[in-house]
Image (cartoon, rainbow, N blue to C red; front, side, top):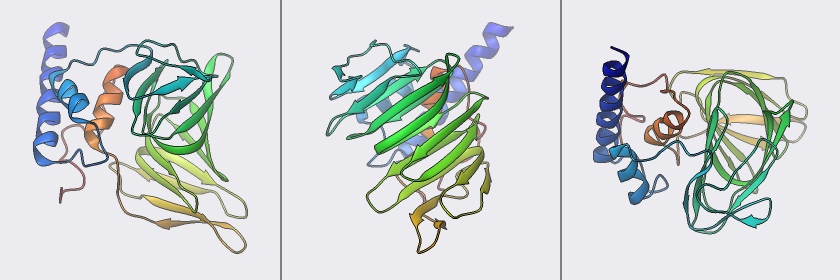
Length: 231
């Protein structure tokens, strides 16, 4: 019975991803054709560390390849035109090109992340993790989230779950979403950091399905229509 249920979930996930691919929901900045086809077929195994790599990446300054270990206190960077999928314990990350990210741990468990540059899509197990991006601090637990660090702003989409956003001079902002409802543009204001409504951009449901599947989970939006509906 358990085996049949697992097969049924796998088939449902593949059908959902194929629908996303056919509808164009991956988008130009999303998964490459090779990676999206592998995802649709269910061919991405749950390899710890560097799970998937297209182009170049380094771990702690050393050239990485698929299978290179990544732990909760390592630093990962990707090169131009590159992207990497990273699995650390019960968390998974998609790093786009020109991204630098540093992980930190508490008693062996990932607890803090510094995104120095670039774009990162992440899914987390149910534990507190603090994400720093420029001067913004985002406290999350068991969520999916996308962050872009740009020279003049930080783009943040809480894809699902709960988060607390904080920064210089601003009151803590609690964010609760089910399916990308509140993307934000985070900028420094005259007296305080501010978070303004922003567009949905540069990440997809299919990518979240991929990341969650690598750590044995399914996103809570599974079965809903792809977002945004216009794509």
